[in-house]
Image 1 (cartoon, helix red, strand yellow):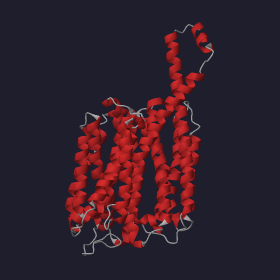
Image 2 (tube, one colour):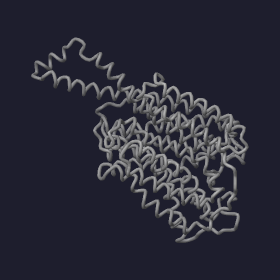
Image 3 (tube, one colour):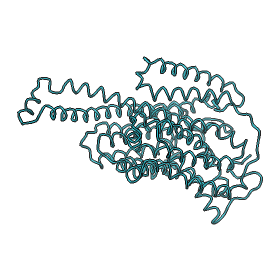
Image 4 (cartoon, one colour):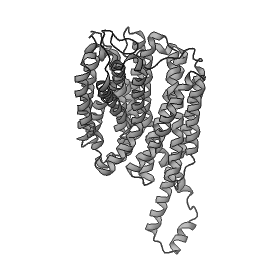
Length: 514
C-alpha cells in the first residue's frame, strides 16, 4: 500500500545525496529506453525491410507488434506489482527487456523479429508506469515535483531521440544495433535497481487476475491488428482469412466489453467511461494520437524511399517535431490552472491540423529546412494538446478512479498508435497506386511528348524509364498530400470532440498517476 506521494507507508525513508542521484538516473533511464523503442524503429523500417527482403508495409509490423504487446501488459502492471512486488517486477521487466532486445538484434527473418518485438513490448509495458512509481518513492515528499519532472522529461525526450539514434545507427553500423544498445543499459539498470531499491519493495497480495478478460483482450486486439497488417496484401475481405479475423475481432471485442463491465476485478476497468467528460477525452485522444503517430511513421518512409534521405537525415528531420514540444510543455502545464483547459486542448489539436494542412501543399522540390520548419511548428501542438488532455480527462472521474482512468488513457493511446501505423501505411500505398494510374492516364494522351523526346535522340526505353520515374515521384507526392489532408480533418475532429466534455471543476495532480 502506498500513499499519495508514492513513499511506502511502512516508514521507509527516501534517498538523499549521491544515492538519490544514482537511483534516479537509472530508474529514469529505464523509462527512457522503453519509450525510445516506440520510435527508434520508425526511421529504420526501410533499412530493416531491405535487409530482410520484405515490403515496407511488412516492415511496419516491427512497430505495431511492440505497441500492441505493450498495450496488453500495461493493464496488468497493477496486478503484477501487488502479486510479486513493485521492485521485483521492475527488475525482471528491465532484464526481460534487455533479453528481448538481444533476440531482436539476432533476428534473421520477419517472423523472428516480430516475435522478439512482442516479447520486448510485453516487458516494456510495466517499465513505464513502475519507473514513475519508484521515482516518487525514492524522492522526499517535498521533492515529488522534481521526480515527476525527471520522469516527464524522459518521456518527452525519448521519442525525439528515437529517430535520430535509429537513423545514425542504421547509416553507420547495422540495424541490429538499434536493439543491441539496450542490452548493457538494461543490465546496468536491473543491477542498480536490485541493489538500491530493494528496501522499497511492497507487501505481496494474492489478488486474483482476470484471466478471461486477459484472454479476450489478446484475442480481439491481436485479431484486429493482424487483419490491419495483412489485409492489403490479401485483398481485404475477398480473403476468407481476413474476413474470419474481422469476425473474431468483432465478437471478441463485444465479449470483452460485456465481461469487463460485469467482472468484479476487471483487467481493464471500463467504469470510468460512464463519465461523459472522460469518454469524450478518450475518443479525442484516440483519433488525435492516431493521426499524430501516423504522421510520425509516414514522414520517414516518404523521406527515405522517395526524397533520397539517408536514415540519419530522416531521423534529424523528424526530430524537429519534438524540439518545441519540450520547450512548450512547461507553459502548457502552467496554463491548465489559469485557462479553460478545453480551449488549450482544442488549440493544440487545431494547431496540428493547420500545420499538417500546410504540409499537404508539399512538393518533390522541398528542401530539408522547409520540411523541418513544418515539423518544428507541429511540435507546439503536441504539448498544448496532450498534457492538458490528461488533466481534463482525470478531472471528470471520481478520486478513487484516477489511477484506473490514467491506465485506461495509456492503454487506448498505445493501441491507437499501433492501429494507426497499419492504417496509415496501407492507405498511403493504395493512394500511390491510385494516383499513379490516374497520372499515367492523363500523361501525354496525344503522344506529343514522346515524339518530342524521340526527336531529341532519346530511345523508347529511356523515355519510358524517365516518364515512369517522373510519374512515380508525383504519384507519391499526391498520395502523401492527400493523406495529410485527411489527417488534418482528423485533428479538427479531435479539437471539436473535447468540447463535449464538461468544463473541469478541479485540477487533478497527476504526479503520482501512471
